[in-house]
Image (tube, rainbow, N blue to C red; front, side):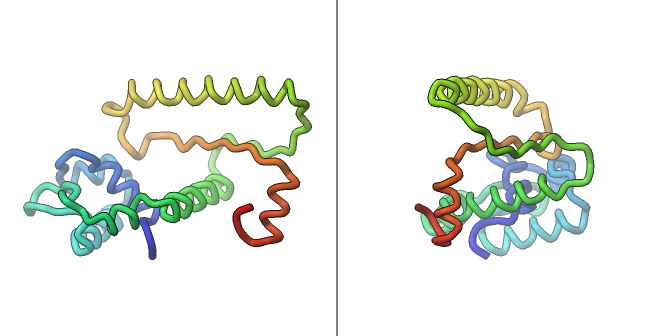
Length: 161
């Protein structure tokens, strides 16, 4: 598989620039013990993580090819699709709205300004809480806007327009 699964990404993001023990990764990620252990071992084997036998850290000097595999456009798109699908399929309480909305040019400008404000709020909220909120407790937030005609054309053509 190119890139990382969402579970692997959670482990990698949990470790980030830190050196964490297995129990710390387990607590940060919220994964089941055997899943977390298997992911850590697989990422060590792939050379993404290194360990001294007690602590895990992101390997230094990852090749540009590995960086592209982990963080490239295809990897990020696959991760986004996996997470969006999980939100859509989630049975527990969730907030998910999807609508086709008629907007005139004025309302679209207002909407875009509101999205800019939302993005600034989210950046500030993340900066404030990133060290105190474990990875498992973070929220997945996404939004997007597309014109119906362009999206339908893309679907018919099977790729980007």
